[in-house]
Length: 194
Image (cartoon, rainbow, N blue to C red; front, side):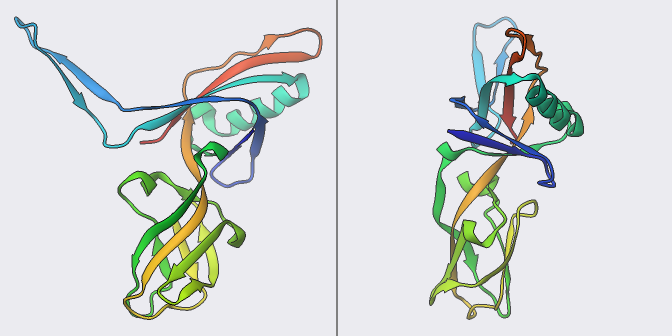
C-alpha cells in the first residue's frame, strides 16, 4: 500500500510503500474541580483527526530525500498533503445548488468532507448536475474548488465523486538509526489538521 505525501505546491513529494498505522482521535480537555472528585471531559472538536505512524527503512540516499522534503516544509511548520488509499474515494458529495451563471463550486466546509482536499486532475473527479455529468475545467486543491467549463442550469443540484488528500503536519521530531552499512530506519508521526 502506497501512502503519498506532497507539499502545498505539489512540487516536492515522496511515496512510501509501507504498511502504516493510522487511528482517529477526538481531542478533549479534562477538567478536575478543586475540592471535588468531579472530572469533566469536554470535546474540543466535532470530527476525529487522523494520526499516521509511518515506519521507514531507507537507503542513505532515500533518507536524504526525505530529510530534504521535511527541511523544505519546516519540519512540521508547514502542512503537507497525504493521499492515503485507505480513505478511498468520496461519492455523491453535495456541492450545493447552482445559481445563475455559476461555474465555481466549493467543497463542504462542515462535516466529514470538510477536510477533503480534492486531487487536481480531471481524471480524479466527476461532477454531476441534474442533467448528468458536467465538464470540468480546473480543480484547485488548496482552495478546495472545482471550476466547470460551462454553468449548469440555475437551481441544479450539484454533486461530486472524487479522490482526495488530507492536510497533515509532522508531529514531533524523527531520528534516523543505522541498520547496517547502507540502511537507516526511523518513524514519522503525522497528525491531521483540525
